[in-house]
Length: 397
Image 1 (cartoon, rainbow, N blue to C red):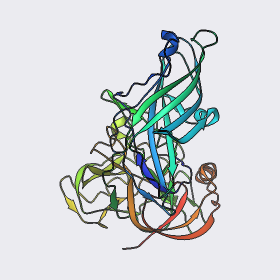
Image 2 (image 1 turned 30 degrees about the horizontal axis):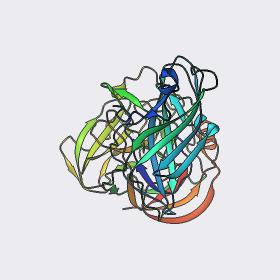
Image 3 (image 1 turned 90 degrees about the horizontal axis):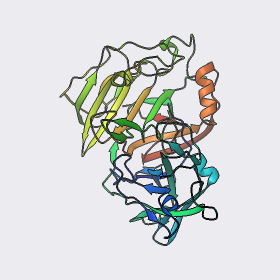
């Protein structure tokens, strides 16, 4: 599960992890081979750099990743990263910001220090004014202190990792659930659990969960569950109908996997079973929707079926790699839930009725069964991507 900062506006995906193609050149010549190639930023050709309205303020948000390579025998401390659009600095990250966003390949903890001979992913999220033109090309100017460089020349600046937005339209969908009190846990745009879940699959690095959300639900007393924690039936969202978000074709299903015991993650789950009982819909236009962790035996569709928006597909469960009953939902660019890259999407109509204090408070309420504090608000939303820790009311068909 991911918990993501509250951000409003438009979300743009710029970079696809994997196949490194845009190696940066040294910012200055004559500094020695170790220095010149020490901190080389790189990025892949964008897979889907899409823009998506994110309620309710209409700002624009850019969400992407950049590879950093320490091609030296010493540690590198990344002191500053500037995102540059031509001559204009779009964003500047200081060392503290870098330290919260730079993760060595295969790790989930962040640090501004890169060990010798390592690669790391810098997870970037930029906010632009609503009336600002989308950048045609972004580059990244990275100032680092390189231990392996000669004395007096250890502070080096490299520029590269060029990326360009792909402006293909974002898919607009209906809600995957109906009714009030849903929590958009793990949603856009700055997560550490979903949006940083880069996985090596078949020789490439993918980030299928870049825009994923874990839908949970509060009861009238603001509890996530009431009753024994280990009983899936105690949870407000358990067995809730799951709805088709569009007229679509069923691309794949899995069923027959047992419910897990809430309260702890199961052990020895194979990657192929991580989604549990699941459905993938082909929405058309290269967009696929995943519904994961469904109740065993509740699936009402088969591969190849055509479904209509609002049709009941299955019920929320706790199968697969799940710590509590919830609906994991994401849109991606292939029918595989792992070998894919996550795409932004817009839900055409819902209301935001509140926000939680954040991830820590949500985790505590989920663990302890205590009421979750809510800051109430009432905001009808059109064509937008729900944001992390918002409380969402969906229309009832």
